[in-house]
Amino acid sequence: MKQTPGESELLEHIYQRSAGLPGLSGAFGEVVVGPGDDCAVVREPGGGLLLIGVDQLVAGRHFDPETPIDLVARKAVARAVSDIAAMGGRPCWGLAAGVLPHGFDRSDALFDAMAEWAGHWGCPLIGGDIAFGPGPLTLSVTVAGRMDPGTPPLLRSGARPGDELWLTGQIGGSLPSGWHLRFEPRLDAGVTAAASGVVHAAIDLSDGLGRDADRVGRASGVRLEIDAAKLPASHHCRGWHDACREGEDYELLLVAEPGSGPPIDADPPLIGPIGTARACRVGERPGAVIIDPHGRAHDASAMGWDHG
Image (cartoon, rainbow, N blue to C red):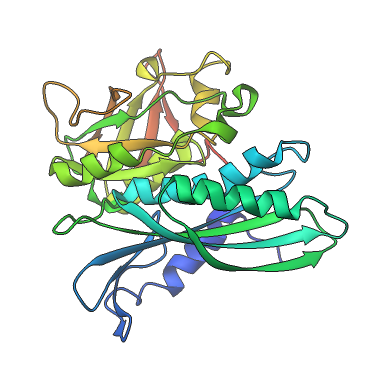
C-alpha cells in the first residue's frame, strides 16, 4: 500500500516540480520566486515587485470551533499578512474563499469581520469565492503586497556564515495564551529589515522555530546553530524544546550581519542574538540545530508542525 506523504514530503515534491518557474515571463511580468518561500514574487511589467501569499484556516486544526467569530476572521487574514511581513513588503489587496458547513448561520458576521481586518492591515478584500460542504469551516485568504521601490524581498535563501539570528518576539505557548488568535503581524519590522541592507534572510514562524529555522538553513546552504539558553520561551510552555516545536508564534526570525546590537530598531525590540549561521562541515547537511544547556546538539528539522 502506498503511504500518504506528509507535509514536508509533499512540499519537497512541489518545490522540485516548480524549480523551472523562476524566470518564466509573460503578460503578467516575470516570476522571481516560486514555491518554497513565504510568498511568491513576481516582477511586474513596470518593474515593481509583487508579493503573493495564501494561507488556509481549518476549524479544529487552527482554531477551536467555539472561537469567537471575530477572532476566526482576524486569524484568517493575519496569517497571510504575516507572510507579507516576512518578505519585507506592504499589503495591498486580498482575496478570500471559504467552505462553509451546511447550516452555518454566522456567514455574514464572518465575512464582515474578515473585510474589517483586511482593511485594518491595508489589504481590502477585492474578491473571492464561497462553497458549502459537510466538512469543517475552512477559509483561504490570499494577500498581495508590494516591495518599496529599489528594495529586494527578504528570502529564506540569504543567510550567510557568520550571520546572527534574531527574533521579533517570544516563542512558545501560543495556543494556551491565545496569542495564535491575537498576534500582530510584524509588518513594520519586516519593512525595516528589508530596507536595512544588513538583514539577509527572514521567515515567518508559523510551524515552529525548529522546523522553520531548518528551512532557512537548507534554503541558504548553511547550518543555523540556536542556543536554547538564549531563547525567549513563553511562560505558557514547559521549556525550550516545546517553545521550538509548538508553532503558531507568527514572529519573524531574522538573519543578519553580526554587529554590536540589534540589526534594526523595532517595536517591540528584537530579541537576540539567539544563535549564528555557519558553513557546513564535511558530512553535514544544511539545516538547523538547537544546542541545549548541556551542549548537546538537537536536529531542529522535526521540531514543529507537520500537517500531513
